[in-house]
Length: 91
Image (tube, rainbow, N blue to C red; front, side, top):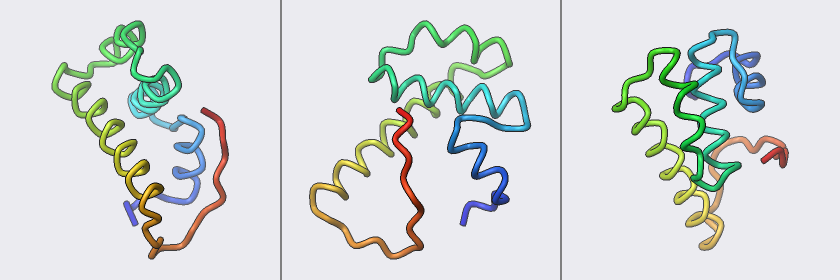
Protein backbone atom coordinates (compact mmCIF):
# COMPACT_ATOMS: atom_id res chain seq x y z
CA UNK A 1 0.00 0.00 0.00
CA UNK A 2 2.97 2.35 0.50
CA UNK A 3 4.34 1.87 -3.01
CA UNK A 4 7.24 -0.36 -2.02
CA UNK A 5 8.22 -3.42 -4.01
CA UNK A 6 8.11 -6.84 -2.37
CA UNK A 7 11.92 -6.91 -2.20
CA UNK A 8 12.02 -3.46 -0.54
CA UNK A 9 9.50 -4.61 2.06
CA UNK A 10 11.53 -7.74 2.83
CA UNK A 11 14.68 -5.66 3.27
CA UNK A 12 12.91 -3.03 5.38
CA UNK A 13 11.56 -5.67 7.75
CA UNK A 14 15.21 -6.45 8.52
CA UNK A 15 16.11 -2.73 8.83
CA UNK A 16 17.95 -2.90 5.49
CA UNK A 17 17.71 -1.08 2.17
CA UNK A 18 19.58 -0.94 -1.13
CA UNK A 19 19.93 2.80 -0.52
CA UNK A 20 22.56 3.64 2.15
CA UNK A 21 20.60 6.65 3.45
CA UNK A 22 17.40 4.62 3.82
CA UNK A 23 19.32 1.76 5.43
CA UNK A 24 20.72 4.18 8.02
CA UNK A 25 17.24 5.53 8.79
CA UNK A 26 15.88 2.01 9.19
CA UNK A 27 18.74 1.00 11.49
CA UNK A 28 18.13 4.14 13.56
CA UNK A 29 14.40 3.40 13.86
CA UNK A 30 15.23 -0.18 14.84
CA UNK A 31 17.69 1.07 17.46
CA UNK A 32 15.02 3.33 18.98
CA UNK A 33 12.71 0.33 19.41
CA UNK A 34 15.39 -2.13 20.51
CA UNK A 35 16.85 0.30 23.04
CA UNK A 36 13.43 1.49 24.23
CA UNK A 37 14.19 5.05 23.21
CA UNK A 38 17.71 5.15 24.60
CA UNK A 39 19.33 5.59 21.18
CA UNK A 40 21.28 8.83 21.61
CA UNK A 41 24.51 7.01 20.78
CA UNK A 42 23.05 6.23 17.33
CA UNK A 43 22.59 9.89 16.37
CA UNK A 44 26.10 10.30 14.94
CA UNK A 45 25.53 7.65 12.28
CA UNK A 46 22.27 9.15 11.05
CA UNK A 47 23.68 12.66 10.99
CA UNK A 48 26.75 11.41 9.11
CA UNK A 49 24.59 10.51 6.08
CA UNK A 50 22.98 13.94 6.03
CA UNK A 51 19.80 13.70 8.09
CA UNK A 52 18.80 17.04 9.61
CA UNK A 53 17.62 17.44 13.18
CA UNK A 54 14.08 17.85 11.82
CA UNK A 55 14.30 14.59 9.87
CA UNK A 56 15.68 12.79 12.93
CA UNK A 57 12.76 14.16 14.96
CA UNK A 58 10.36 12.85 12.28
CA UNK A 59 11.84 9.35 12.49
CA UNK A 60 11.57 9.37 16.28
CA UNK A 61 7.98 10.67 16.05
CA UNK A 62 7.01 7.94 13.57
CA UNK A 63 8.45 5.23 15.81
CA UNK A 64 6.59 6.69 18.82
CA UNK A 65 3.32 7.00 16.90
CA UNK A 66 3.57 3.47 15.49
CA UNK A 67 4.33 2.10 18.96
CA UNK A 68 1.36 3.95 20.44
CA UNK A 69 -0.91 2.80 17.61
CA UNK A 70 0.17 -0.83 18.03
CA UNK A 71 -0.35 -0.73 21.80
CA UNK A 72 -3.77 0.87 21.39
CA UNK A 73 -4.91 -1.51 18.65
CA UNK A 74 -3.68 -4.56 20.55
CA UNK A 75 -5.38 -3.44 23.76
CA UNK A 76 -8.79 -2.78 22.21
CA UNK A 77 -8.43 -5.62 19.71
CA UNK A 78 -9.05 -3.57 16.58
CA UNK A 79 -10.08 -5.76 13.65
CA UNK A 80 -7.40 -5.89 10.96
CA UNK A 81 -8.92 -4.89 7.62
CA UNK A 82 -5.93 -5.55 5.38
CA UNK A 83 -3.98 -8.70 4.55
CA UNK A 84 -2.03 -10.01 7.53
CA UNK A 85 1.64 -10.87 7.24
CA UNK A 86 3.59 -13.27 9.39
CA UNK A 87 5.21 -11.54 12.33
CA UNK A 88 8.86 -12.00 13.18
CA UNK A 89 10.21 -11.15 16.60
CA UNK A 90 13.62 -9.69 15.83
CA UNK A 91 13.56 -6.77 18.27
